[in-house]
Structure formats: structure tokens, C-alpha cells
Length: 306
Image (cartoon, rainbow, N blue to C red; front, top):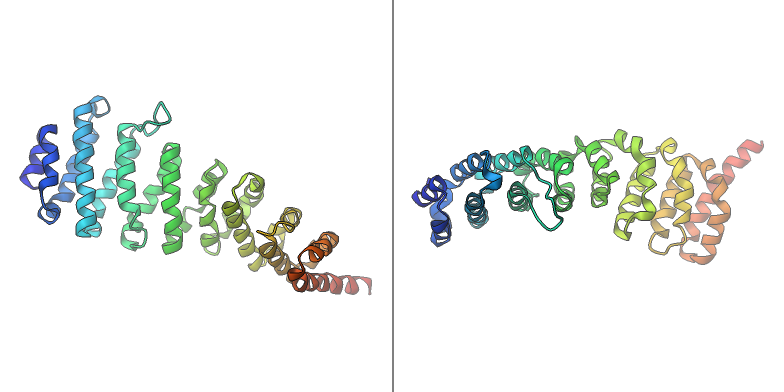
């Protein structure tokens, strides 16, 4: 380890900690994993939560390390030590007594999280990080969970398969109010449909409480289920879908979901024809799709009547 890092960490010398920023990033890059391991030992000590000096030293050292990792692009070399320190925070209190305050380990977790998860497009780092990130969803404070959700959503774009095994935990986090994670579900649906089918009724019941962007993610999930031809799963959602037909922000995606359903389970839509007719009068651009739904339901009626 670089002699200055060694001095600062072994003696917990706050007066010298700031000097770490006078060193060149590449000069200390070799020392970063070892420094992270030393920080883990200090932050795991029994008196760390009450020791302001040690906390201040560790905060400065982590800032210096994460800066050097970014500047030297060495996340893949130090990812294991970084994730190990991050994971060790789960063994300590992460929920502060007051809203605007972080616990000592909450601060460490937050600083490391942004360094790790900004690399959401690097599979080797995300393979290490995702299982730990999911555990933080269950243990972290609200602010930590919100930030974590934001990064996990980016992972879903770059490497959704890493999240598939954690689908049920993600759903439970959504149902506890972490609705930002809704954007993950369409990405993992094809790989893990079963837990989504199981909780779909509960997820859909949140629709009216969601923001517009989150409602769109919910509709994209329903669209993915419709394309996978899952009539039993979707039949209960048709009344809700027809409620959103009259909203110009959603009418196009909703009518396409209903069109998909009509192609394999048209009778599910028989009770919605009058609503669809009214929508067609208000939104002439949707008449083509609505006519196809009418046609699908009509063909089944003809067969039944014969």
C-alpha cells in the first residue's frame, strides 16, 4: 500500500487524510484494493459508529479511492474489494433516526454504490454487484433504495439477465412503494414470467397511484404478457385497460394490448365493445385497430350462434 494511505489508515490520521488528494491517481492505483480491505476492517470495528474521527478519515479515503478508480478506469481491477466493502455495510445499521441523515455505514454504502453502479454496462462488475444491490433493496433506507432502484433500472437496459433471478424481490419492493423499479419488469418478463403472473393483480391495483412514466412501464409489462398469449393472467385487467383508453397518453398502447388479446381470446373483450365504439369516435386514428377487435369478437359470436 502507498505509504501515505498506510499512515492515514493505520493511525486514522485525519490531519494527513486530505494530503491523499495531492497524489497522482496513477501513483496510488496499485494500492486501492488493499486500502479498501483496510477500510472494511476499520468500519467493522465495534466503536466505528460512535467514532467521529474514524468516520471522517474513512469518508475522505473512500472519496479519494472512488475518484482514483474513475480517473484510472480501474473498476474491473478493484471491483471485488469495492463490492466486498459495500456488502459489509449490510451487517450494520443503515436506517437513520432522522430523514435527512445517513448512518455511518449508510454513507459508505451510498458513496460506493454510485461508483459501482455507474458501471452498469460492464457485465463483470454487475455480476458481482447485482446480488448485493438487491439485498440493499430489502435492508436500506428510503433514499438508498431510491438511488439503488435508479441504477438497477439502468442494469435492466444493459444486462437484464442478471436481474431475472431476483424478479420476486424486485416485485415485492415495488409493492412496498418502490415503483421506480416497474421499468425493470418488462425487461425480465420473458426470462421470469411466473412471479410476475403471480403478483400481477397486486401490481395492477397500484396503477391509479403511479406517475405517468410508471404507468407506461406497467402498460408495457401488460403488452409483453399479451404478446406472450396469457389470457388467464390478463382477463382480470381488461376493465382497467378500458379505463385508460380515453387518455391520449395511453390510448395507443392500450388498444394494441386489447388487439393482441382479441387475436387469441376475443370473448374476453365482448363486454368492452360499447366502450371501444365510443373511443373510436373520439380517436379516429384508432378506428383501424378497434375494427379488428370488433371483427375478432364478431367471428366468435358467429361460430357460437351456429
